[in-house]
Length: 541
Image (cartoon, rainbow, N blue to C red; front, side):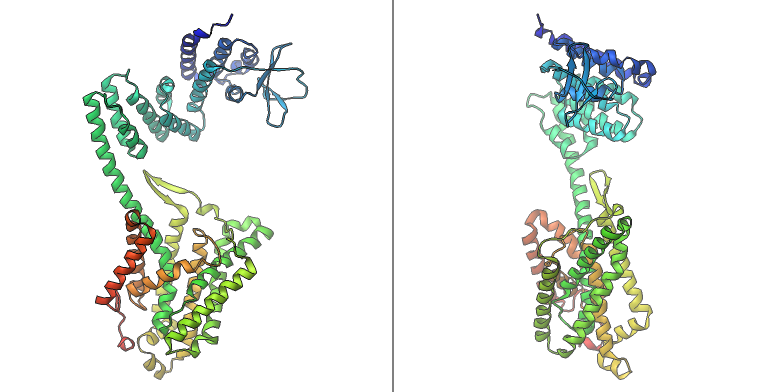
């Protein structure tokens, strides 16, 4: 007759066996242990729940490499045995069988019976899998197990955690295990009060929302000293989180500002030199993004090994394609409309609609997938502060584009002529500068830089025919706020608006935040019509 009431004794046996396993782990992979696999696994060939629970604890404590696969198969009801010779097998997903002791495929198993489960067996399985994961050779698996214990706060894992902490050599994993142990100690009323107060300090060191939730969930009848320590820790955690949140908002603001800088810097050049309100500037950004898509499609088809270099190939092509289209627009349309700003605005708006429809006809109206190279994937964690690789790359790229443009405008003959036309067009023409060609190449340069912005935006935004429309208004705001034709003003304006936008979003929302920024800029240009950095020269008079 089965004794289901023997559950406490089985649980005690399981804990003792797991403790012995954790202490003996360095010697667990010996040849003797491997040779004992058949005998250990054969213990599962029984109908008695208590014997099955004991078999789980014994196999986990043996250090056998087959322990985790066998126990996991039992947990998912895939462990079976043959009554004739008590051989145990694991049923795979496709219906095949492998020997549970060796892991080798088995062609014919005959009639089998499943190894049965009840609550006592399930508790033994949970304890065994937790212990095996905490002592896994892979640090990532140990860290994941510690995090899972922190969230579950299972008191059954306390002994295994204590032993694992003593053997852990990876400082990061050890810290996670200590935090998981502290989470269990805090909620366990049977623990000494001094230990629970010490655990509060460990949870305070973690300093995230999970820690705050744990400390705030203590029952009302908690001891006064422990409750006071928890409240003090919550105040400190909230202060830390507020500091990190401000830092995260600044980072997100700089990231947004770098995107606005890339989108607006080309517009600042054309608007400053030519006085043209180019409503098709956003479509140059879109063309750069679609150029990236085409480059990646060609690489996927003909040279998959070059995929990580796809963006480096797309950058010059996007600049040339967008720049060439910009020159064609200036030579074909805009040069006939100088001095007529309203007609120029309407003409460029019409061109933007034509370009959008052309892209819809060629590529379709749905979003296109642009892959992220491996070197732009992942993130860097600095406590609660997370820096994503793609955003960091875009910030660095924006800085390089800005610095390169400064060198071109300050150190080259083309830059000298561009600055001359910007400051005094009539005098520059009188000095022999071909202002019409300066206009064409300046418009092409601005459009080419917008194409570079499209390559960057393809990594963080949807590539669709409407991509540029989301940035054209913000680009004009940046140019007007920073100062028309002033690159440093564009840089400062982009960063200020990006950071302000990210600080406003949590309180006012994304839409209302943009409206508030627009109202601020309207009021600002009432006081400073020329922006933060006013352009100097007779052309502004």
